[in-house]
Length: 249
Image (cartoon, rainbow, N blue to C red):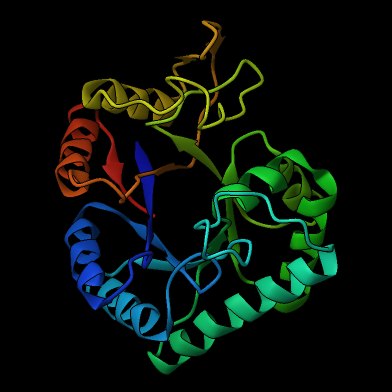
């Protein structure tokens, strides 16, 4: 069996952060590069693309609400037209740099509050998919398994990767538990590793409220924003291999 591992990168404040990101790259199959909405700048984007090429990773865009102050983690009250304009600007910045580097963007994964809002609101999801269908028809889409983005992608015959989170709790409705809910973020590494295997194989996980959920995913998110991220990445790869899973995009 094979499973894809994606990681959100390029979210630091200087080029030093890119070198920390590069240490994770041997253990993943694709990266989602911040493109200016919540984090990142042209230099960081350019270096992130270069490092990803060196590790033969699939390169994707990681746009967000235009909200650097809150790192894109709060919903922003803007019109849908303003949102679509912002997403287009973010994607174009990264696309231009990818073209300069002689590569193409492979996929898109939304960030933070926009990720959550698009998964909960079919209208937002449909507007975003419409933008992608018009301007970026070749981009694959990564989103929450069983969410609104998956449904909107299916309506438009778009390639969609169902994403699972090994370090987040799920509600009974198979949605992510809000971060402000106590215990919604899992800190026990062994628990996270077992959850990754269960998501990859579709053998079932226990929800925040104790219900058994059983669904499979195409890609698993590895978060890079902890000091132990490289260690966790290495342990994840080894644990997946022990359970007959290889990393492949």
